[in-house]
Image (cartoon, rainbow, N blue to C red; front, side, top):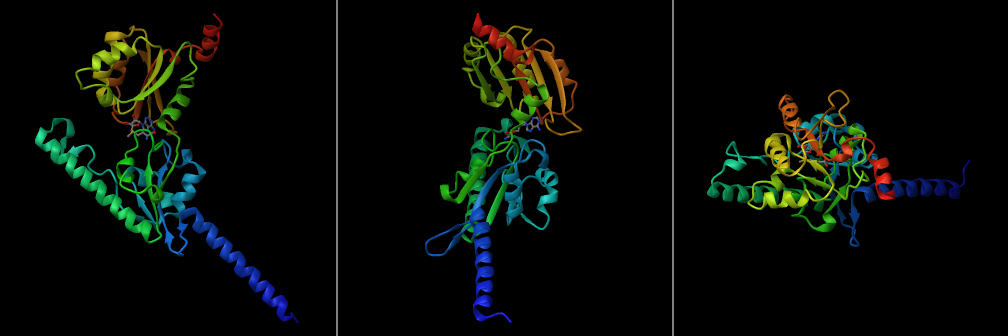
Length: 306
Ligand SMILES: C[S@@+](CC[C@H](N)C(=O)[O-])C[C@H]1O[C@@H](n2cnc3c(N)ncnc32)[C@H](O)[C@@H]1O
């Protein structure tokens, strides 16, 4: 027969353990304020370039805990195993590239103005919805591809939130996955000074573009272009004005996808024809630089020892 103290001791211990467990799981997803009110959180999750295989443990654990999910249809497919039973609130960047079903670049100035107003309105509405759930103590996850801090559209929404309402979980970017596919070092590499991450839409389309490229061409660099397949003509033709024709160029398609990853190699003279022969015009990165040939790190050692 157990005495009162033993029974009381066991139930006290059990209750304490349950409380610690509840509070520690809450701590992972929510802040408890001094007044006892629980605040949820919005997580922008870098999910990696190609699905769960490349997502971090933290990314997966946070997805599992989320009450609400914002993501694109493609992301929903990729992470379907982890999204069962969750409320999907749609894509936070719906309509990003289209306005009235037309290409953003072909809009009149008046339409562009309306486009910007409509976009900001949409992001504000999404941020307001997130804030509402966070205030109710819920966990909201935005699934972004690769790493959210390089060409990650989620920032448009979270810039409308307060600092303590959101957290960013870093992810493996397509830059890293692509360089791994190329099996090369982006830097150090021979006399390369820096690595440039950009996209043709940020480099071209303004009067000073040529001057920028001309200046850039004075320095040995590794260039990585996102969202470039659709603008390959402009990109390669412009680079051809200032760089030697034998400068190596590589394209990595579907980096990290086991069945689909593909690398094509060439130089400024030959790559355009090879890109045109491929169907994919979104999921690929273009790399330009000497790092793509030979032994870039050994080359660097030789270079500095000269
Ligand atoms: C909006 S950006 C997103 C980049 C993402 N935040 C990252 O860090 O990987 C989309 C562009 O990233 C590149 N990209 C994304 N995933 C890729 C993949 N698996 N393989 C090759 N390129 C990819 C393509 O250039 C695509 O047009």
